[in-house]
Image 1 (cartoon, rainbow, N blue to C red):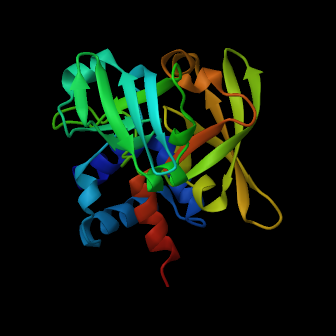
Image 2 (cartoon, helix red, strand yellow; image 1 turned 90 degrees about the horizontal axis):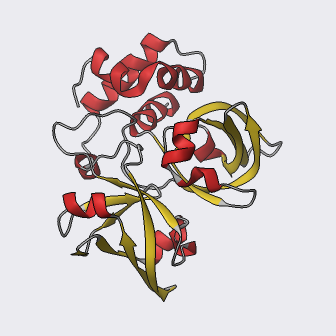
Length: 246
């Protein structure tokens, strides 16, 4: 990624920068940009940064088979568009979680989720017939039209309510406070506001879903009680690390 102010602004967008500034306890937008750039230049490189997703769902896949249990699950997914472009060993995000394509058979891809993945994400709840949000890893030259994501789920949120709002939906999600400050479900979503409970242990994240998101992802199927994977933009994590350091 270009390590310039314009590159960072392009990656985060105005709303993303405003959110980082608000989270930084009265930081201005320019200060938030400067902090993020400093983090990119001075922090030790993370190997996982070589693998990038944008959070923009490219295809709706369908689970054809699920085998295994608590010790690990093999998922056979029908995703024709993704299968044509990914190679064996390639990385694909399923509902926001990065998995490795172990085998490609025509329009189907085989994945395996280990116990750690099952504990930290909602993938263990998938059943044959379920639809899945699919995004292959970004390749050099691809547009970075969403956010800078790693496919490493920070936590699992639970839908509290879903309400019609104009042509879209407003969804409230309960999540751990450490996730709710900067995270968003894996699609082109925008945070509206946050509200922490009295103990400060859990927070609520409110998002607005536009018609395109509802048509292109599984988020139109959200109902109270449904679990969603949450991940914060990695640039937001850098800023948070700098703001919180003594």
